Length: 162
Image 1: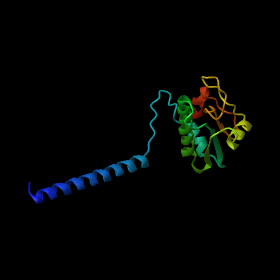
Image 2: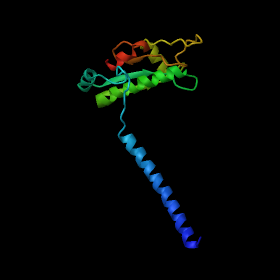
Image 3: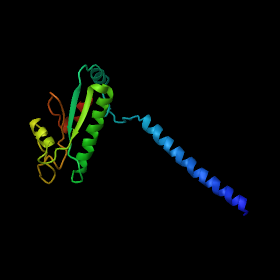
């Protein structure tokens, strides 16, 4: 190989790597800008109903939704998964309601203001498989809307208005 071919191969390699990097960044930006959530469940459990969307869009005063969810390494995977589902659904409310809906996620650690607020809101610690009862180690399984009763996990599908 001649020196000219060697330099040309090197330049093509560098340009190829740079082009791939630019393409990857562009795909990342476009995919996040056009984030579309697809609900493939039979009963559309993860989608707000049209009626719910209409009500949320007509809100004329701000509504704060407080989500009490324990976070950290010690939290059971099932609770984390459920907490993420509830948070995703609350984000759908936020998306539908715009500036009139505020989502406030609180981590009720022991002896914290968030734990006190959860207790004042009537949210009690949940038992784990090991029989522990502690707000700080697991998701409280409740999303609480200001002025409304807490919604336990078995009734989660009603959160979506279905």
